[in-house]
Image 1: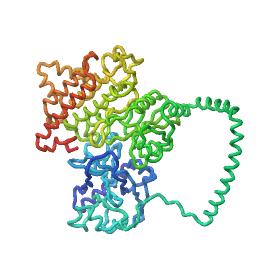
Image 2: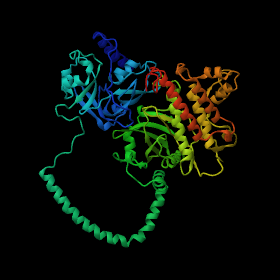
Image 3: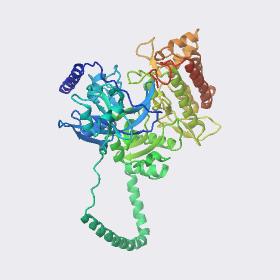
Image 4: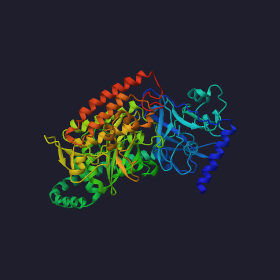
Length: 615
């Protein structure tokens, strides 16, 4: 209660200051524009953070940053704030593209959009949605900047002037004014809470960095010479020992075998040995090599722990039956790290087996892995816009704008291409077995990738297109009849599940929906879609179930075609279902027709691009 009262008091004082400066809403932010969205960070930028009692580690976790890149900075008043280095990427924003760093925040009781913006995120948050829900994790977008100088995102504090800001961050008034055109009419008038981009180090002082190594003194140089001579002697001694060692090698082999047997009994050692011998050569994940490698690499437990701020709750971005997923920072690269219990080794190896063999732009990329301490870790590329499920089901509550019709068709096509690739273009056919909207992830420009291969099965291609599973796996609402009745598993099982995904894209409903006739009972979206098809007036019935978030802005003919493809996928008989290549061809036609329809509207701001406020 005391903590809530303290936060409320801070917020009241801030709002009072805003009122006294004559502004009802001073956060008029013009994010720094950029030419083209890209998942690769454009630069490393800085955020000026007022810690409000939080230490560097907590601050790094809140801002999805590396704790080693959080530097203290002292104000003339004696207060200590933080400069936080973050990756700054070009992403879609409104009707344009701009530079942002994204983080996640679990909404707390009594939180408001204003409080999150000014108190929690030091005035740096951009357009926090008003209708937030307690305990729901939202994405918070933080404007950042890229320039020849290091750019700091700085929220004006009471009593600030351009001169005091430039002195604090080693900038100058002209450089700040040039980077913030809204200051030009009256550069002497600043509002508390106003967000500025400040070029740092324009006088030649470098931005904060970890302390450089000390220069060698004369005594150190002497010590180095002595050490070099000693090492030379040591190497000669070792050469003699090596000859002796070779003679004993045969006798030691039996001892080594005994040691290996002992190590195999240790669970962590067993997993590491299995990973390196069955899948990949041992390879360090340090530096940028991990992101350049074509094959997954090994990360140490220390690296994954540091990347996730010791798996801090504020970094958690997802949770499923096989583990929790955290946002991690490796260097300046954002990654997603799945943490699994060692008892989930079967699912762990399933993902490794598939993703080591699959490389496609519509399949999530596996960067590396780690094992030990009774846990297994998978490191993936991070997709900024989360899952398709979050964008379809209560999107505003989760901090997303509703998807437009054209964006939905493109997402459907992207996902279909990813599934087609694992079905038809790999040496061994891969059956995903858990296709659903929460396993389709979206990048910064709303392009889709298929993820989560924990239940995937590799089967040799043959004339028989199905086999039997030993147990029922998958998600209720997405399971085909033959899997439920007879435990049959095939690529047509994925096709059925994808049909449910298409139905969700059209209706915005979940795979299981409340039964309107019987309280406390659920029924499948598949049943609802079949009722529409069997209706006396299918067109009217279809219009009744189209997602209200589309706001009646869609080409009805293309919607019907999408539903036709969905119903084809949902055929009870697996033989009657299409192959994924046939689905991809149909969806390609729907995407092209939808783009032409969108262009014919002449720039309707609600329609163009991915979301209703622009993609």
